[in-house]
Amino acid sequence: MKLLLLSLGLILICAHTEGTHYGWKRKFDPRKYSGEWYAILLASDQKEKIEENGTFRVFVEYIRVLKNSSIVYKFHRIKKGECSEILLVSNKTEKDGVYKDIYDGHNIFKVLETDYCNYIIFYLINENNGNTFQLMQLYGQAPDMSSELKKKFVKFCKKYGIVKEDISDLTTVGKSSSWLSPPESCPQ
Ligand SMILES: *[C@@H]1O[C@H](CO)[C@@H](O)[C@H](O)[C@H]1NC(C)=O
Ligand SMILES: *[C@@H]1O[C@H](CO)[C@@H](O)[C@H](O)[C@H]1NC(C)=O
Ligand SMILES: *[C@@H]1O[C@H](CO)[C@@H](O)[C@H](O)[C@H]1NC(C)=O
Image (cartoon, rainbow, N blue to C red; front, side, top):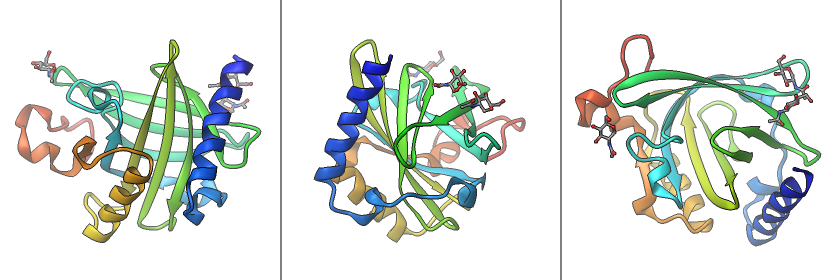
């Protein structure tokens, strides 16, 4: 387990040295972005994870920071037309601003950029039985956001090798396909 996290840590270090944007180097205070959020864009280099029925096609509801510095994420997921809730606890790691949790494998993630008010961009690496993939998420304070912020996210994705075709717009999900729209028990 330790070895696994170490190797994932190394991947993050590599991403770090490759990235030039200041956002990757900065430490963000989770207390400042805890609250309610909307899932806006979702991207992955393993697209089936974020497509219909994919385990990472998740819609964030809120983020809370616990006293012990772990972070709780509440998501919902639409699986075979049914809504299920996911409550995930992520512990911090030895690395500044880097968190880990277990969901469909081992996840390690951090915030690439946020203004604490309008948007957050998350970068996650999933490891499961020796396979890894990258996932990026854009959260907003409202059900939709400006095209400037969306473009910023697309740029980040490009930097990590995720192409435009592998970005999913979650703001249009409810409109495009009726069975996909969340039931009333699931806000958004
Ligand atoms: C922090 O508290 C939560 C809730 O009790 C728990 O699930 C989590 O494992 C704790 N984190 C650590 C690092 O102990
Ligand atoms: C998702 O699951 C539903 C219900 O089982 C099925 O009808 C649908 O075709 C699945 N979608 C994909 C992309 O596999
Ligand atoms: C978080 O920390 C708690 C307490 O040390 C531990 O029981 C739990 O397994 C940890 N969770 C993860 C995902 O590492």
